[in-house]
Amino acid sequence: MNRRFALAVALVALLAAGAGCLGYATGGGEVTNETLDAEPPREYDFDADRDAVFELSTDARYTVVYDLSGRDELRLYRQTPYAGDQPLEFEAFRYRYPDGEVVTGSEFRARGGEVDRTPDETWIRLADDMEGGKVAFSGAGSPRRFTSLAYVEGSYAVTLPPGFSTDFPLVGHVSPRSYEVETVGDRDRIVWEEVTGSIVVQAYRETDLTVFGGILAVAVLVAVVGTLRFKRQLEELRERRREMGVGVYDDEDDDGFL
Image (cartoon, rainbow, N blue to C red; front, side, top):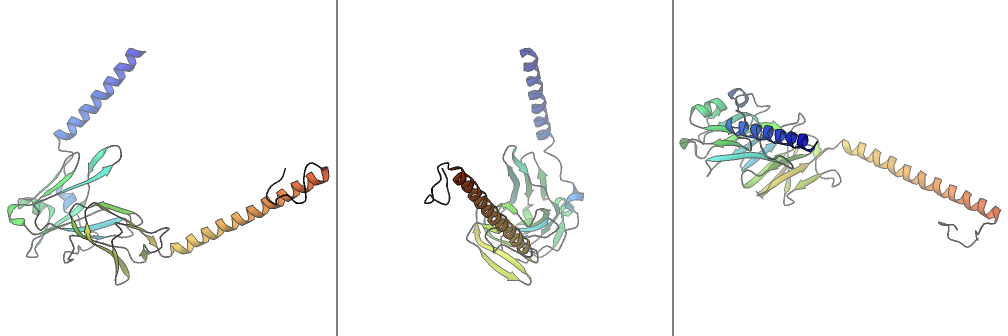
């Protein structure tokens, strides 16, 4: 039995090692031009004056624009509790030159830029003549709880979908705490002047507060009814013990009995 168990463990280890080596040998999976050239869910805000600009939507797709001034590459990854760093997946890649020209992912590659994926991260590398531009792409992310690492240091902005807010502390949360909220049309925009670690935005639809208030009211009502019912049952029990003469005194505390 011990020999069979040892052989099984060795086989699993061999398969895992083989899978890991294969992953590194193949570069963790190619990011295809079709993925990069996909149509964005909405227009990218290349004109924003922040280092990173996110726009969230109710279709669970976010868009982001990163200013790469002073940088020639960008490492994108997500942290997982058990599998370590994993490459960030995205689509609808666009690059805008400082003069305003916007190119797709395949054009970006044709002009010397690189978008490569390894088992641990996705790399965006600029060609020599691309200094000072901006990159944009789209990915999966819910406005109810959106998180992102700060892949570039500097100022950040996150625009919520119409009708969403973070004001109510029980259901809304923003980190880092040094932020301000601007109103842009019918939308809230959360802005930070400096971010170095990560951002977390937990938002709610303002109409959800009515539902939340109703649930809270029902919970309070259930608690009150339960308390009154317990007191009534306790009083009935005390009355029966008094009738039986089993150690119940008139001056004992109302909340206990002997």
